[in-house]
Amino acid sequence: MIGASVFAAIGPAAAAAGSGLMIGLAVAGMVAFCNATSSAQLAALYPASGGTYIYGRKRLGHLAGFSAGWGFVIGKSATLSVSALAFGAYTLPEAPRPAGIAAVVVVTAINLRGITRAAKATRVTVSLVLIALGLVVAASVGGGNTDAEHLADWGVGGARGILESAGLLFFAFAGYARIATLGEEIKDPARTIPRAIPAALGITLLVYAAVSATALWAVGPELLAEAAAPLAAATDAGSWNGLTPVVRVGAAIASAGALLALVAGVSRTTFAMAAEGDLPRVLDKVHPTHKVPHYAEIAVAAAVIVLVSLTDLRSVLGFSSFCVLFYYAVTNASAWTLSPAQRRWPRAMSGLGFIGCVTLAFTLPVPSVLTGLSVLVAGILIWRVRQALDPASSE
Image (cartoon, rainbow, N blue to C red; front, side, top):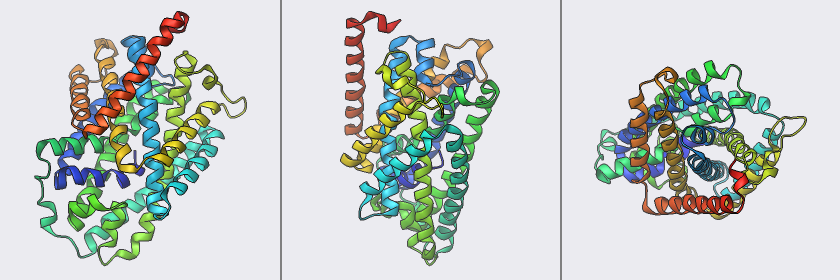
């Protein structure tokens, strides 16, 4: 969660809601927490690779599971392209696409060596990113540009704008699913996952609130909305602008760290779907030495390289958010079916999470909604045709 998202999503959120993005951040955090409790309960019950693809199949039926898995793979592939483009925007603004593609290749090579190496690298990247975000806060507050008027523009876009910003900022919280999708590779998952997901979410919300509030206070929503690298712009505007290169390095590390975790998470869901016959079977192969789904990881990386080559950061962010919100709507619907003995949190939280996901999904920009719906429907239609031609694949 603490990765490319905070460096990329704050600009589009500011464009949608102005200073109201702070309300959007709170709404996104609330919906994410409901989703996290649903994910944690289900992950403890079904500690297998695949996340909601597995939960949907077990609790709601094959179609629900496939739809969630398809939404996750497509939406998170788009998220990967956002992270790669954010890497390019902060490190090599004059050529962001080649830089992003190079980052995808490097992190895929790391992941192919095994999840233990990826986890160790993630610990290092999160520590460095937190330092960089701390410098953003310090430079924003201490740079001499703070102005209360920068926090006064709460009316941009009205209530819909705030909800749109929440949908875009939700993109920044969605990483907790990766804990669940790696269920087969976690020690004592029934105990570890329900504790890890809410704790990680709470820490991330506090960090994002501090960074967003101080960046707004320093430069206002208009500058953040216009900047290709919003947090670098916030740092550069004041007298502490000597820290800007360090912030850019932090953004690069954050983006690479997000790519590292995303490639692992998306490839595990791809692997699970292939193992069940919902994607080509070749993608369920596991490397004999490194014990990772290497064909799935390579396929995901190839798809992301195509997206990085053809899309821009802001247009793909909304599409990614729509698909991920759909995925979590299925998560909450699955958690709603749990019995009292299987619950760790009140059932109402699953209902609130479902309503929140649907609401935020359909208040995203119209092109994002239409593209997301089209891709989801196309995937379901292809799956239905395949089921009709090969009934054994549904067994």
